[in-house]
Image 1: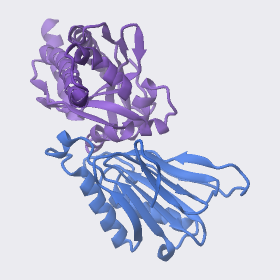
Image 2: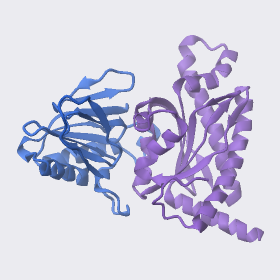
Image 3: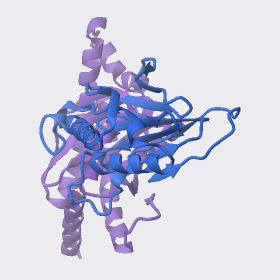
Image 4: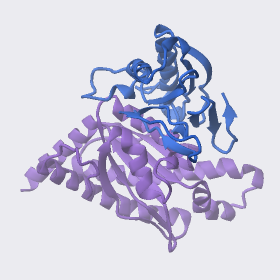
Length: 175
Length: 225
């Protein structure tokens, strides 16, 4: 799903727009902060073009389609979601050469699932495909917070492009 | 039984088949309540489970939103303690209990007080006791399903994790999302003494496992007829 925000009055109060799993939201509404809550192995990819003040946030679940899914949204996957996010940024005036990306997530939450089976190393695989796809699309990954064993929440302030990440019980850190 | 997705393509027949699964899970959950009450030494009741189906991406918000009285999206960030076991054997899936960390500790606190556990060992033994809660609950429910279907179904060793609820629920969800666009989950609330504790007991079978379960139940039903 792609949702599109609209321009707003600068004096309007700030509000938070949640970006759920398999969702992508692109906005130039300067009141908004886009937030993906509780990322585990998933990765949140935030993008910003400072010249036109367009921000986007994508919350991917898996690295790439396996072919067994039936009509899954491209936003579920890093390999298809990232190009879709870039296209939506461009359609709102962003230019690929100006877009700066920041990403967080790719943790391994349950060690029992991380050691064997189909979910082995899923966090690392998500991160690898995110980095590879950004490189292939020639988008600079300016900062990242990947791996570990803790969940994260990532946010991007549309007005400034400031991105932050926080773990459970800890204060937010700028990225 | 509730189906949570208006876009669900389930037929009436499928709904009836799922009701059969639901009945067996209810019987298993009753058994789990009895065994857990004995284990923790006080009244412990897992309420009648609800069976839900939702788009796989909505699993976190739907399952968490129905159990915890919190803002639906940010509930993914709220810290919970998860007791997780993989389901293996003839069918595969995920078994997860999610509670507020304080509730998880108070659930097993009577056991540790009785053992006069030194304070520095409290965390380790709390995890161990919570793992046993997971073993007892999952065995009761999975045994009920195995008895009714003659399938081999068993839990893995338990894993205990305290972190953001969304991040914990994500692992089963990622697994299901590799095969399917819909997730079936069974969730419930837990009542300790007279106090209802918002909690989730989520049993999430892989789609192939669910089909196998239903097929065996149909065979068993035809034999009885």
